[in-house]
Image 1: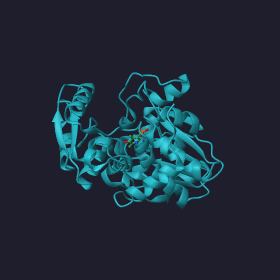
Image 2: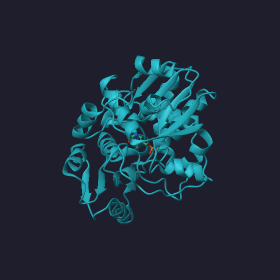
Image 3: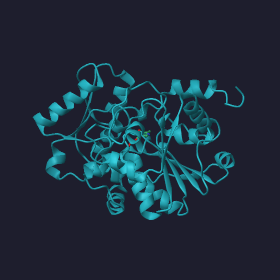
Image 4: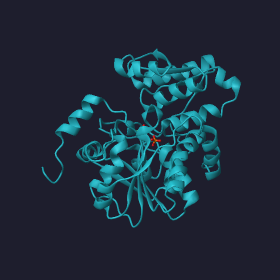
Length: 328
Ligand SMILES: *Cc1c(COP(=O)(O)O)cnc(C)c1O
C-alpha cells in the first residue's frame, strides 16, 4: 500500500503554492448556526481563482515537477474544475497545458478553458475517448498527466485549505467536505486531524452515483453507474486501482452523508438567497446536509464550500424556482 500524505507534506505545499492561490475567507453563517445549534462557518473556495479549490492541488503538482518535465507540457482530460485549474496553473507557471475533450463538449465550456490559456485537443465522442487520447499523447510526447485526485502532490495541495481552517478556527469540532474522488477530503482530513486530532471529518455526496461512498461501504474500490446530478463535479469513479484516496478516506473520514437532488437544490438556493454566495451543486452539499438536519455536531462546524462554477441559467432556475422544504 502507498504511504498516506502527511501533515508535513501539506505544510510544505502551503509554502510552495501560497504565491499562486488565494487564502479564501472563513465566514460565520448566522442562519446555519441557528439551524445547527452550534457556530457554523463557511470556507469559501468558490472565491478561489478559477472558482474552485482544485487550483491548489494542480498548482502543487506542477510545482513539484522538475524543469525538464514541466517543459514537455502538461495534459489532462477534464473539462470541469480540474481542467480549469490545470490550464490556469500551467499558464501562471509558464508551462504549456493541453486539455483533451470529446467533440460533444459544449462550446461555452471549451471557450472557458481556452480563455485560461490552455490548448484544446478534441478527440472522440465521450470522456473515455478523450482520456485515451490524453494517454496516447503522454506516451508519444512525454507530456505530464496531472491527476485529478489520486496523487500525493494533488492531495497535499488540496489539504492546504484544511491548514487555513485549522489556523483560523483552532477549536473546529466538525468539518463537512464534499466527496468525490476523495483528494479534497483526504487532504483536508490529514491537515485538520494533524493539527487537532479530536476533530471529526464528514464526507458529503449525492445519493446516486457516489463512487467513494459505495467503495467505503464495500470495503474496496468499486465502480458505480454514473447518473446525472446537480452535484456534477462529484460524478466519476475513484479508479479500481486507486492508490491513495480510498485508503486515506477509509482511515480518516468519521462519517459519510448522502443527499437527494431536492436537498442539494435547497443548498444552492440557501447559498444564494441567504448567504449571498453563488455555489455549484458540489459546493453546496455541506450546506444542504445541515439544512436537511443530517449532521450531528457538538462544537464549531466548518462547511467546505468547494466551488462556484455553475451554469448561470441553471443557477437562476434553482434560485428563482425552488420553494423551501417547509413551504412546499
Ligand atoms: C472536484 C470537486 C469536488 C470533489 O473533489 P474530490 O477530490 O474529487 O473528492 C468537490 N467540489 C468541487 C466543486 C469540485 O470541483
